[in-house]
Amino acid sequence: MKSLVTVLSILLVITFSCKQTNSIKQVSFSEKDSIRNLTDTKSDDSLISIIGVGDIMMGTNYPSISSLPPDDGKYLFDDVKEILKSADITCGNLEGTLLNSGGTPKVCNDSGGHCVSFRMPEHYASYLKDAGFDFLNIANNHSGDMGLKGRESTVQTLEYYELSFAGTPDYPTSIIERNGIKFGFAGFAPNKGTCSINDIEKAKEIVSGIKKKVDIVIIFFHGGAEGSSAQIVPKRNEIFLGEDRGDVYEFSHDMIDAGADVVFGSGPHVTRAIELYNGKFIAYSLGNFCTYAKFDLSGVLGVAPIVKIYINKKGEFARGEIFSIKQVKRGIPVLDGSNRVIEIMQSLTKKNFPETDLVIDDDGSIELKENSD
Image 1: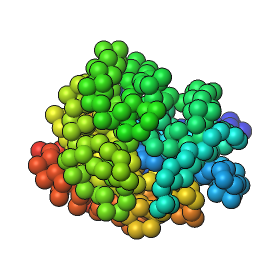
Image 2: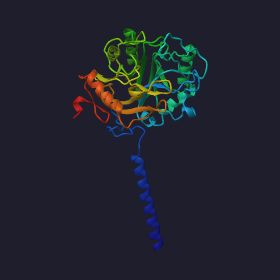
Image 3: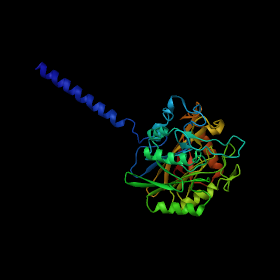
């Protein structure tokens, strides 16, 4: 009898332990949840989550390997990859080429130190894949840094690692299908060899064309003036280093009118305001996200957001959140406990777009004004 009681007791303990273990597994962190409880970010079948970040240059082996991160850069995204992987779609701007060696460095008549060429080792694309990126914009002023060889290698490398991209006349758009939803992407910049941000009519044609094939259209542009004095969206064409860098305000509105649902911007190397236009989300500049060794990261140039938004299946903005990032050790993105970029975006949005229906709370959550209470 005692033996039977002993056996039953052991079985009860094992059963209870198994239930406890299962319970812990059920409430553990999910890849589709945010690591910070800014808002209720658990998966909601009725909403689509999209992340946008700014410029990415993971180090360059040109003109020497001294501008590559130590230990081959494998750790570059370690502090932020959990966030990057938490969205249905994650996007960024690839600032430079993927090429192991060779190519033709660009030549320009600039004496102010702005003329640099970026050549990232090809296997660095695997770091982007591992960090959770789905789409990379290749329309920018550094996509042609290594001439035709650099452009061809970049495209071939991104294809090899199954990373979607767009932004050149040969590759103006791309499509990703996920969970039964088709996402269309297009990239634009004011630079040679890219889909032009200044040719509005052609840009509209590209966007309206991709809209017919997909459910959600995401635009990534690289435009506007550069530097710490370029935080304000001037709502006119911006001239920098003698180049017409576009009217990003008009461009963004026109792209939404043509069928875009989300517009992410980069180029100024600083963070700019956000806006809601006809129910669709615009981030005018996402700043420097991971820019190793060759970028000025002082002051506002060294902080940036990871912007995560939630939209419905019509592309309309529902809510969002900002994760504050700073770059350390020559250009490694880490979470910034001071939340400096949140304060910057609050101030710029109130100043630049006081009429917008978006409210940025102190914790980084982005809400519609009617829901802000």
